Every structure is written in C-alpha cells, then in structure tokens.
Image (tube, rainbow, N blue to C red; front, side, top):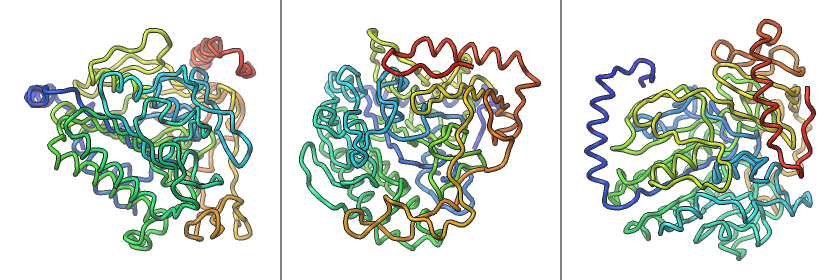
Length: 472
C-alpha cells in the first residue's frame, strides 16, 4: 500500500482522470450508500491492520481498492453513543445518547430522540430505499425503533447480543427467541443481499451493523473451528466473508461504481481481540478503546490502495455521505463532523481540529494533531492474571443466550497494560508514542494549555441535562 505522504502529483493526476471517467459513467442516478459497522472490532483485529494470524482477504481487497484510515476515532469506547454519532454526525452530548440502553439492567428510557436527523431520514426524503440489518442499540422501546428513524425496514437485535432477552425483531415484531447466535452473521448477510437485489433499480442506503465480534462470539458451522486461530479468528473470518459477499453482490448487480461503502467499528475490542499495540481496550478512553479500523471504497470516485494518516472520526460519516449524494448539511443544528471527500478524492490535507472522547457523562480527552490530552484520569480496566474461576453473568447459558461456551476471559487482555500510571492531565505524542506509554505533560505545558482550552470550549456546549464534567 502507498502512504498519502509518498504519492506523487503525477500518480494523483492519473487517478483523478480515471475518477472523472467513472463519474461520467455513474451519473445516471444518486449513489448508493452502504455502511458496515462491526461491533467491538479492535484496531488490530484485521490482517490489513497488522494482525499476525487472522486472515481477512475481503477486507484486504476492499482496502486495496479504496482508502484505509489509520487515525479514525469514535466518540466513546462503548456501543450506543457511537451508533448515534455515526448516524447523525453529532457528538453524544448533542444527540442525547451518552450511555447504553440496557433492558436487563432496567435502562429502558434511553434512545435516540425523534428530533435527531439520521442519514436514513435525510436520504429517504430524497427517494432512497433504507434498511437497517443488525444491532440497533439506540433504544428498544417502540418510539425509538429504527423504523421511526428513517429506515423502511429493520431486522436484528435491538441491543447487544449479551443483553437479555436476546430476541430477533423484524420491524416491530419478535421473530425468534432465543436467538441461535451462530446464524447471525450469515442471516444478516442474506438479508443485506436481498435488500440490494430488491432495490437495484433505485438508490438505496444499507446500514449493516453486525453483532460480531461482540461477546458472546459465535460463528456458523462453515467457519467454527475452521481457521485454527480460535473462536475469535473464526468470527473475524466470517465477518470478512460477509463483507466479501456484499461487495460481490454490488458487482454482480452492476452497482460497484455507483456505491460508496464504508466499513468501521463502534469501539475497541473486548478480551481476546487486538488493539494492534495500542493501550487499553473497550470501555476506556486510551487509544485502544477509541481508535478503530476504517476502510472506504468507491470505485471510479476514490483512488485505490491509499493509506491516510490524518485524524478523523465517525462524526465525519454523515457529512461525507451527504457530500457524496450532493445534499447540504442540515442548517438547524450543529454537525460536528466534516466531509472527508476532498481528503479521499484528491488527498487534500484538511486543517487540524480537535477530536473529543467521552466516557459516561464526562468529556474525557481531546486529540489535536499529534497530541492527545487526557483531562480526566483514564479508567483502569478489569484484568486478571488468573481468570480460570471467572464467570461472565452474561455468558452463554444454553437457555437464554445460545453461543459456544469457550468465550474469552479477563486474562486475555487485548491491549497494552504497560505505561505511566494513569493520572489527570496526561499528554501523549501519538506520532512518537501511539501506545501512550510516556506522559509528556511536564515537558510541553503550552500544548497542555492549548488542548485544555479546546476541552473547556467544548464543555460550554454541553446541554444542561447532562451533568457538567469536573474541570481541572
């Protein structure tokens, strides 16, 4: 792969000529949009992001045919707020979902407000067919259902696959309980292909938020114990297969150059996954919790085989999609993201900006340029040197949660456990120290002051119904 920094002007010129030809060919109708959103997929879980054992040929090919982002961030290191952000282009403190709705913990009143505008709503107004297939996790009460947020149809689990009751919902109706989780990836893929076929003659938006590799991990018989890399590797192989099936169907239907495809994850990995050498994991604001893999492909429009290192985030997905479709941003609300199309199409470097990470109802950290400031002490995560006696209360039980018994444990930590002890106001140079090992706040007080000013300015925008995080 070629890094953006070494691509010559001549190469970019040739690519842009080819892009222009592709655009002429595909100008008949607005482009389709496909977003494939993995659950708890770590930055280092894919072969094209350096995993030494897992093989992901379809995603490798997608990266070779498009752009691979190395500095892509989610706003929180856990599920629901991230999902609200990718669909609205807004940080959690704006769209209102800053914690996870959880039916078996009695958190039932959390959901994406009807006042929020999703990609699905904006595209459906333009005549797009819209479908959500997979994990929703933006509210499990009827008023929060995907079909109330711009999606024509929905099939999937309304929250995480370890939250009871694990039931499949089609639109508003239960169609399976308990769910045989080994069938999920294949069933979601079959539904996605059916949606593409049914709507090949009109523009469509497919949102495919997979259950995997969120625990409990499960893979179909075609993949279970077939990779030789354990259950996690089996699950990743099937997820990769699913991506390949979707891309293949787009080609079969003659929609390849007419479709923008985005693949990414909602946060970092759980036990058994890999952060690719980053510190931390899911649920904490170290890099391992917030930095995710992201691949974008649009043949004939986006150049091939490019690696981009500029920091960006899932806040940018909605603006990028609207720019691709030719629609303006909503002007009645703050959109935190910006379109990445100039960066993706021409390699145009964009101005530095602050990117924020949140945990609970607290603004936790800020990244700008090469530096990241943890204003609040990063939370320590659960780790056990000996987890042989550990029992997951949300693990497979053979009755309400149906999945293989051999799930991963807290001694199989996915990220770095080393580095300076967590304290307030830690500063890291992520270019020199991506693993966040050495706090340099004492050496660069001016950088700390600059990032703290960005942090304070964003705090002023927090709504009154979210408690103001403590200031430092």
